[in-house]
Length: 505
Ligand SMILES: [Zn+2]
Image 1 (cartoon, rainbow, N blue to C red):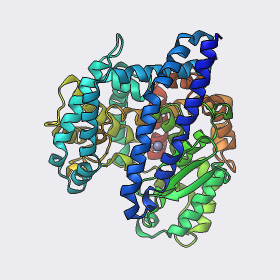
Image 2 (cartoon, rainbow, N blue to C red; image 1 turned 90 degrees about the horizontal axis):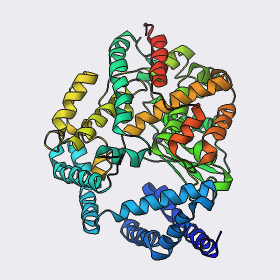
Image 3 (tube, protein in one colour; image 1 turned 135 degrees about the vertical axis):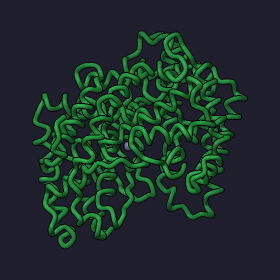
Image 4 (cartoon, protein in one colour; image 1 turned 180 degrees about the vertical axis):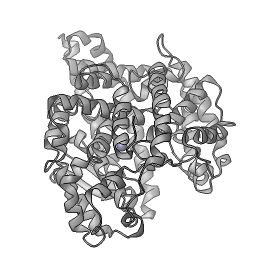
């Protein structure tokens, strides 16, 4: 290493330590979001805005840029983790430089106008027209953005898809969603009517929230949620946030009339959390700590929520504990009734409430619409109509209003186009991970053990420990021993639901 590279490395280390330190105030601010006294908000928000602009200056400042340039030129001499990190930092800086500043700032104002106020109003009133002009501008900007950022291999929607999950393209997603369409839609049409009704105990009773919390705490032990490093709180929408691999916090939401909701949100968020807890200590002080991508993160949460958490083996072990807590309420409920209840599939309007089987159809619909936005066939003028037509075609439903339709998710109205497909991709990764894990040990037997230790150890070794020190595709391919293949996901769902519904595949 020459003297100038060494100097650049010292500057880079110093500035990235500083950049990482900014994570702390934002992390703490998000944790207290819902408990904040209302009068504290305006002052606090101004301070957060000030911190954001300091962070932006740090990341776009001359010292940081120069250090990255020098290290990038000397990338062949760097260790693989730092090299990968520098290549990514350089790529984001180059991308940012291609966006005209005036357009960028104007777009930030469009987003502020759209989200949250107009989005929330449109959602609660069910009236899309409130937020329609914003969406029109958001689509227009994203189309321009895709042009600024296009490369030899990535054009249009590809540019956005690659940003949310590096390596994914329209071609790859077309293959994935094409399979969901051709294989899953006809299967779902046969499976749903073949299901038995759910045991009446779940619909007719109240489940004490304190007792639900007691059970979720027990699940924390099952999921190896180390008390020294984790916290569990409450919020309207459950989420996970972390500051490094030693402070991971999740929230949950409890409903008296819905026993499954808090349980599966807890397992889902703990799946995200376990990923962060198991990132290698060596990466803790680098920019390569933390989960690698949306889809890989979602593969971990959904693996625990669905593949593990909705299995019969898991509940064979833990249902007696639940039954002991809700002695009166569950006295007539057998293990099979419970397993049936937590896997019951039903066509619904709302993606976040969808079961494991119909979930990918919700994402398919959003993918087709987003793709159309870049092809020019989907606009703010016809998106609501097309949305409703697709829900009728794929799920057989008549969408009652935009709040349960095109304005149910905040993503588009917050400027995130290209994000949705990663949700379905995560579930598909999870199915292939399960298949790969099975080659090493009996995963279903491990699901029935006292805790998820064996499964967690495998995930740490094959996925978690790498943090974001490699590209998502490289991590997934390494873990499953080959390229991503959506057939595993289709097979997993068909096997599971043909057994549950007593139909052929
Ligand atoms: Zn999640």
